[in-house]
Length: 226
Image (cartoon, rainbow, N blue to C red; front, side):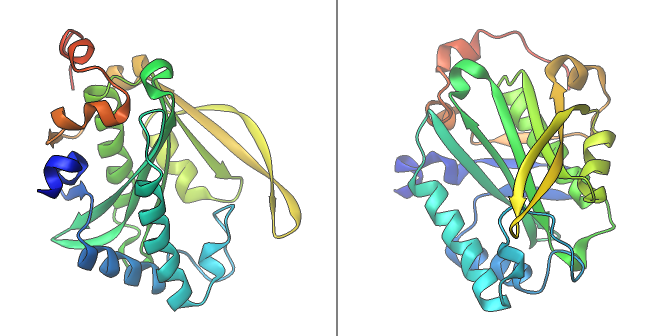
């Protein structure tokens, strides 16, 4: 069975309103259609890769191809997990977590997008909170990073709500122009001091080697309060 070969298919992260998981092929097409309908106001450019400037059909194709390419390129030393967020049973966006040498560094970087029809309801914050629960409470991360353009107020607001602290700036090229991004970092210690929404994770145990984590090391780690 596919789940025996690729146990990430069984991974589920649930928050009060959302379920985050890998999609079926039809669900991947559905979340691509969400992207095709728009993920931000016209004229905004919240991503370094200008995929949201593409025509709707090409935008949807980009979502599908990126999802496939990241799964296809997966290795325990360099991985990117794109979980589709389902709200009331329907896909509303994608929450990503990626890392290099996670088994040693224990640091993740997050990224996400949410369909424009579903914004303004706190779902973006809940998506990221669910991912941070997976990273810190379940996988033993010690820090999480996020990067936002200076004018991406929604992303920066989510980071601040969840306790991230400023961590300097980075300079990127967007449309042939240099733009500055604000870096944010959240430590495990800061995360554990906060109150959190109730979260549950299932199907993780068989996935641990794919994240570069030794089963025995995880089992011996003291339980964390969530």
